[in-house]
Image (cartoon, rainbow, N blue to C red; front, top):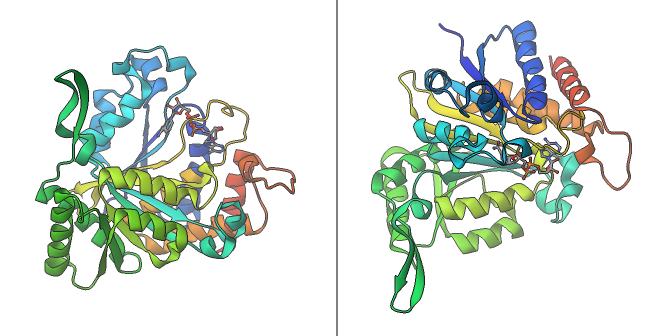
Length: 368
Ligand code: NAD
């Protein structure tokens, strides 16, 4: 059987720095576990613009469509702020998401015990938290027509339209149920069926897909405003939450911040299954290119490392190996290893990006 294939697009700023630590882990899997990935690399964002005059070449786009998973670092930087909108670094990322049709955005909120003090919530509310928000990413109110600012009589009116088709709801529901089967078999769907017709349809379709295809998964429904309240009150009641583009935008940012630093947050964007059954997939840290610390060795590579762990779990079904990486991160943090962004008020000496990567590799060694 062919090795799993991975396209690495490290991008700009701290992107290549954090990606270097993921490459150490990929090398570790090859050397110590006999798991080989066919890794190719390409350019995205500002570095692609510098080399080719475009933030993503057609060749790299085609490569992304071919591989089992894309792992992206970050794009952007002040140098590129003056560029025309059509060639800005972010356009490369948007093109990848659009052409791969990545409609299902997975944003985990996982709180490592050693960092529970970082949350703005009480420690016992967040310690051990491990949930995933599945946000519909390519439809809903951010895309619906009509949209615009119009003149009506003697005043302006701003219009956006929430619009969902059955098939758009069904495919993101399936994505959430599949995810739940790889976790704790529990999904909570959130909408506003009490005041929105699109919410009524959302609830009906999610329930239908559940009853026909995933009766083994435990499904509940909640109004999104109540869901926001419950996420702050007792987030550990949830496992997988599935919701639309707008509510998912808000709820996933809120849930992510339950757990502390931006340098810790991974994400995945998934599309439809390919011929080999694997979903089209792009994994990336939530953070940007952090130009303020690029080149200083201060970047925390954990978000990128955990994004790779998500690829192991969701693209390659290597659940044990994904857990192994996550446990290695947990051990390193429990041992008190901290990059600068994770330093508490008690202070201490932070490790560099590379030292954090080495510590994770050492923890992987210790796991054997
Ligand atoms: P940012 O996420 O790059 O940085 C915000 C703050 O968090 C900075 O102080 C930064 O130093 C810190 N930070 C971020 N990641 C960190 C890490 N791994 N370790 C330690 N500290 C970290 O957001 P920004 O400053 O608003 O944007 C900078 C550039 O990144 C912009 O050009 C923006 O367009 C781009 N951006 C790209 C993405 C992406 O590639 N997906 C996402 C957001 C922003």
